[in-house]
Amino acid sequence: MASRALFLCSLQVAFVILFGFAEAQLQLNFYSKTCPNVEDIVRKEMSEILSIAPSLAGPILRMHFHDCFVRGCDGSVLIDSTKNNTAEKDAPPNQTLRGFNALERIKRKLEKACPDTVSCADLLAIAARDAVLLSKGPTWPVWLGRRDGRISIAKETKQLPPPTANFTQLTQMFGAKRLSIKDLVVLSAGHTIGTSHCQSFSDRLYNFTGKVNLNDIDPLLDTQYISRLRTRCTLTDNTTLVEMDPGSFKTFDTSYYKLVAKGRGLLHSDASLLANSFTKDYVFKHANGLQSEFFQDFAASMINMGNVEVLTGNQGEIRKKCYVVN
Ligand code: HEM
Image 1 (cartoon, protein in one colour):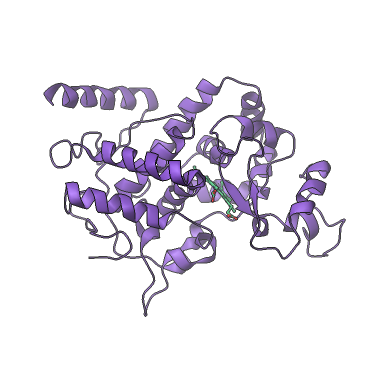
Image 2 (image 1 turned 90 degrees about the vertical axis):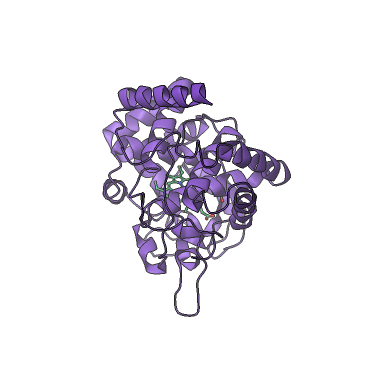
C-alpha cells in the first residue's frame, strides 16, 4: 500500500511537470485510505455494463462533459427534477443523455463497499475515463476528491454549447470554463464515438437559414454526405440515431479528424473547427497524424475538463444516491 501511495505521489508530480497542471484541491490518491478499490469497482462495473450495452460508452463520456460545463463537475446533471424544480437532466440538451441507470448501478456497488465516501461527480469522472479506455482509447489518471452539488437548475444548461455553435461561440463557452482553444479541438474528438439524433444536425440538410428547401444547406457540409444523411433523416425526425463517426463509432481513434477535414463533421460545431487556423491545423495534422500524440492531448484535456469549478473539502456533500440530494 505504501509503495502504491508513493507511486501515485510521483505520478502526481510528473503530471504537474508535464502538463503544467497544478490544481491543489484534487488528488490522485484521495480515496487510498477510505475506498482503495474505488477505481477497480468502477472499472469492473463499466466492463460489465459495456459488454451488455456497448453503445453506452458515448453517452457516459458525454454525461461527464455536460456535468462539468454546468456548475462544474459536481454530479448536478444526475439529479432528478422535483415538484418545485426542473433539473438540468430535463433541459433540452440533456434530454438525449443516456446511462443514468448504469451510473446508479455503479453507485450502489460503491455504497456497499465504502458507504458515504465516493461522490457521484468522481464516479462519473472515472466512468467516463473507463468508457474511453474500453473503446480502445487512451487512459489517464483521474484526480479525485470532487464533492457533489445540491443544486441542479434546467435553465443553467444554456452554458452547454449547442450543435449549431460557430467558432466564436465555442471558444467563448470553453473559455468561460477556463478551457483553451486546444482543449476545444481536442475534446471535440469525443465525437469519435457515439451517435447523434437527426434533430441535432437536420437544419444543415434542409433548413440552414430558415428557408426550408433542398438548397438551404450548410455550405460547410460535404454535398455527398448531405445526400447520404438525407436518406436517414427528415427535417422533423427526432428519434433516428446516426453514427457520429460512421464505420468506427464504437472505437476511440483519430477518424473524427479525418471526417472533419473532409467536410464530414456531423454537427455544425464540428465543422466550425475549420474556421480558425490553429484548430484547422490541428484537425489536418491529426487526420493523418500519430494517434499517440492525440491520445496524450486527449488525456491532458480530459484532466483539464474534469477540474472545472469542482467542489472540494467541506463544500457540497457525498450523495447516497446520485439522482437525489441527501
Ligand atoms: C464542442 C462542443 C460540443 C457540442 C456543440 C456538442 C454537441 C453534441 C450533440 C448535439 C450531440 C448529439 C446528441 C444527440 O442528438 O443525441 C453530441 C454527442 C456526443 N458528444 Fe458532444 N458536443 C460537444 C463537445 C463534446 C465533448 C467535449 C465531449 C466529450 C469529451 C463530447 C462527447 C460526445 C459524445 C461521446 C457524444 C455521443 C453521445 C451518444 O452516443 O449518445 N461532446 N454532442
